[in-house]
Amino acid sequence: MATELDYSFPAMGSDIRLLIGQPLAPRMPAALEAADREKAFVLDFAQRLSRFRPDSDLSALNASPARQVPAGDLLRLAVRAGLWAARRSEGLVDPTLLDALRRVGYDHSLQDEIPASLAEAMASAPARWPAHPHPEAAWRRVRIDDERGLIERPPGLAIDTGGTGKGLCADMVARHLALYSRYAVDCGGDIAVGGVGAQLDPYMVEVEHPLTGAPIGSIAVTQGGVATSGLNVRIWRRADGSFAHHLLDPSTGEPVWSGLVGATALGATALEAETLSKMALLMGPEGARRVLAERGGVIIHDDGGAEVVGIVQGSVNLLAPAGL
Amino acid sequence: MTAAAMAVTTDSARPPVRRRSATDRLTVILFATAAFLAVLTLLISQLHMAPARARMVVVRRLYQTTVVETVIGRRAGGTSVSRSTSSSGSTPAAAPVPTTRVS
Image 1 (cartoon, rainbow over the protein chains, first blue to last red):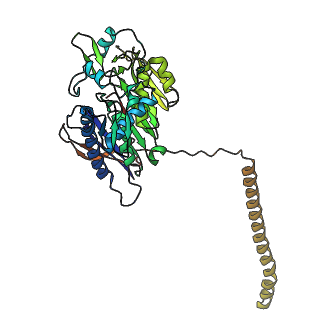
Image 2 (image 1 turned 180 degrees about the vertical axis):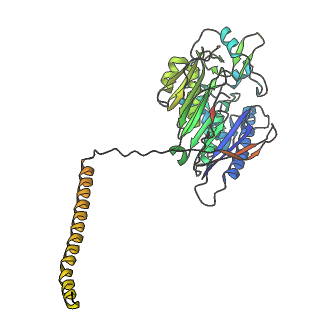
Image 3 (image 1 turned 60 degrees about the horizontal axis):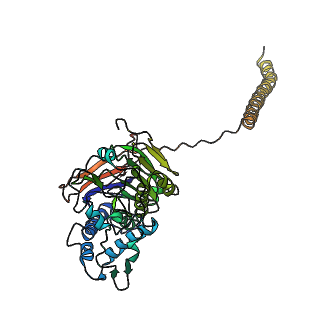
């Protein structure tokens, strides 16, 4: 008889969910014990990398006036993940946009705030235009020295690991669970899947529509990652009445309105999936089709209609939800 | 008829009866064997003449999911645990489904 533990808890402003099968090696902890251990890991991860906590490692890095700042293993790994995403996206998923994020109003946690209406925001948004990398690519001036345990960057260049944090966290927890029969690690919708059992009997991952919150279908995932980016959760109205959200065009520092409201991507890892989904959303429909073609994914257009890109195993309702 | 004559008569009648009985038994055995062989031949010939059928393997996987433990924690920092037991059974039920969404 196969059993699978279903374990969830809040962290990183989201719900974290762990599905863990049976241990495959002797003397390994049972699934529940492993889940307790991973919960402690995730909470520590969130605490040390939160930009909203003044006592976090990330806040200490950004507050330091020095060019070279001592950094622990986790912070160096998180910054490295952000730089990896920047390289992978050729600068579109940029970890050095923290000052721009603060300028547009994302200077505090939005966890307990009700998001503004995406439909209203789209109605008053400027013309749709794909995002472009910042020509200066400040992220290229960030260096990581693992031997000396340092991060080097121009003083004053603030780094945000939030854009890749959940994917990285899901991948790290998944790695810890590698010797369990099957596992799915869901960090607020960024999901890492693995295990022999998942190869034989894939997880069906539901894709949530960003405008309705209802599932529009499901994708079979045997291994790797799947992630979704969208405009509907971190969106607010500015003092001047205009709308803003957290996905910025690096070239302008302003929220991007690309013609897409959501993008789901498959990847070799959750980190890659998260990067690809953000790239897709930032690039708009045409760029998204190119970006998602290799691994597969789903994009949601402004009108609510869905489009499957590449090869995706599963079923997705392509019609725009009624009433939009 | 004297006793001697009866004995003679009786003795002279026995051998033909014994021969008939043995013949009948042999006939029955021969007929039975022939019939058996005929049926066997018929079956073998039909087996050879029957078209080859593709072997069909039906794999059914049924799940029965039951929650055997649930702990609902506080909203802040709380943990909710539900242990799902998946096993073969007659009642199909949905396995835990993760959801990818914007967060």
